[in-house]
Length: 227
Image (cartoon, rainbow, N blue to C red; front, side, top):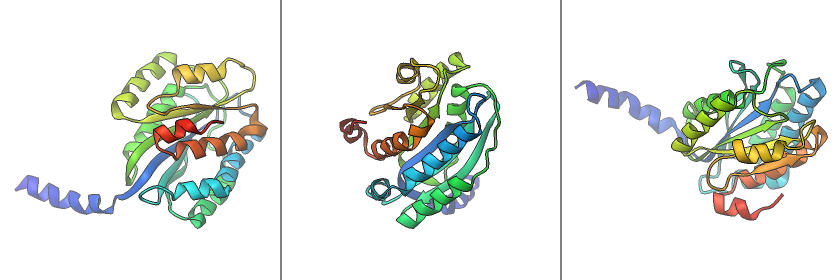
């Protein structure tokens, strides 16, 4: 009888889980290499991307007509903070509301290392706790430096691969011209995964727009859309 009682408890929870086409964690670099203005450019760039008419159209173009989005700041191994918790985007109004919240969101982490492996682990936890059922799970990691936890990053990529989670990268060129290749080799993961390059923080909005347009397509179609 206990198993029946547990099932009866879980059924309403399952019924509440909305189906979406993509569950997307946007992981934003908040480490010591990112100053106040650069962080603002990241958040404003996210907002601009979600206000873009082409992005808004693609957000609702899938079979379920919706995606779920959460925003995560990251730096040190133990420093990750949810900036915007899970939000279902099923209309232009939803996208506009998210953009407004992104502009107003305060910075929650100031400084720290570039623990990309730890950031991916926390993003995976967010995906596991998402109040939706998603056809695809994607982590979108933006950063301007090499990982400070390379060994953990390798381990976390193995776990994410086993879980069927896609990781795409946005490499922000600041001081390291080799960063795009590093992101392609050590960050991007899964069928159809890719890396977009921003030539600097002022270029973040353009790069994020292109990234979302590719990210919101199924793998084979995303590969056909070039930056």
